[in-house]
Length: 122
Image (tube, rainbow, N blue to C red; front, side, top):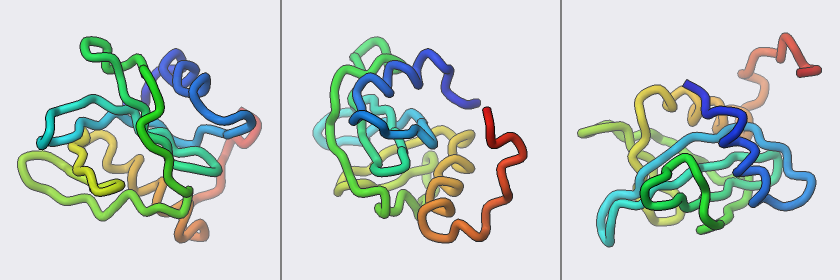
């Protein structure tokens, strides 16, 4: 399920001016040191990790790290749950966001494989 428009707006407020959000998905960092909630925001220019509030994982609290857009999110590793590695940290994601991660990587590394947007003005 995509994140809500309200969550996207909260994320947009923490990004640089003019950055266009392409994808947003929640992720949990795995120990060590502790399990921390994040929102991974993929824009046209960067991939930004936003830490979330402890009891409100849908509310970003600050920018944890920013990576160049050409940073690969995959491959997705499967174990107890789907996992990705970004910036030396391991993150667990819900199954429903596997397609989002694959689409974000395809957009950056093989855009010819993506279908055309049927509603480009939305």
